[in-house]
Image (cartoon, rainbow, N blue to C red; front, side, top):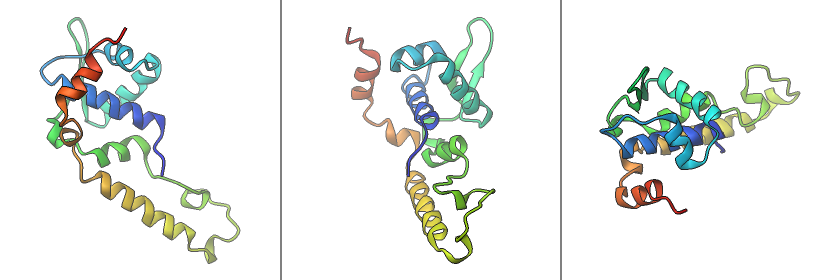
Length: 145
């Protein structure tokens, strides 16, 4: 299983915001911190806002923050929201043209594997993955330049 860069950026943004729970943050700050494309990150943040993980406040003094406490943000739910259905092979999609699909059990096996993958992610909250706050804070907020 492999998640897209879109989901990777979503996790990074959520971790950043979880480390600053009492502040409004900007896309620029997150982009600069991780050295990510601001334009790509803006699309990620937009999706995080649409799916209810991030609250976006517009205007002067605006910014971003988690829409819920980190303990209530499920890592598996984030992946599902960002990725949609995982179609590991063509036959898992809506427009399968695989000649052997009706006689093959690969689709079933891969569906079970994808479900197991998400079930493991479902065991973790954003709070769980940000428990090492001092180390994460040092890595995120200490400029090594």
